[in-house]
Length: 105
Image 1 (cartoon, rainbow, N blue to C red):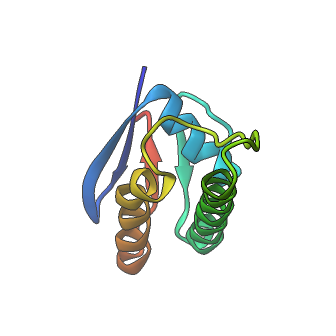
Image 2 (tube, one colour):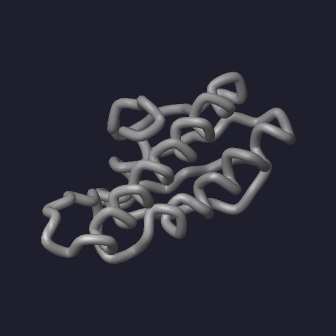
């Protein structure tokens, strides 16, 4: 399955299933086949995404300092900051235009 996040204010953001679920989990949304992120929910979603980036990068920094440490960093070799960027742009542009973000419709 693929997640396609849509808004009337910006281009679609398409993510593989696991990556879409990761974004939804970070922002506190259930990974359902269809859903909405309202304009009112965008500020909290962006805050949650930024916090997740900080946590991810802190874990990477710990692992870089001491490779013997076992620090689990969720995801694959793509940095979370890079994976989140198109989704964050979609949220920001949508909120500025007063449009919700939908998926699965």
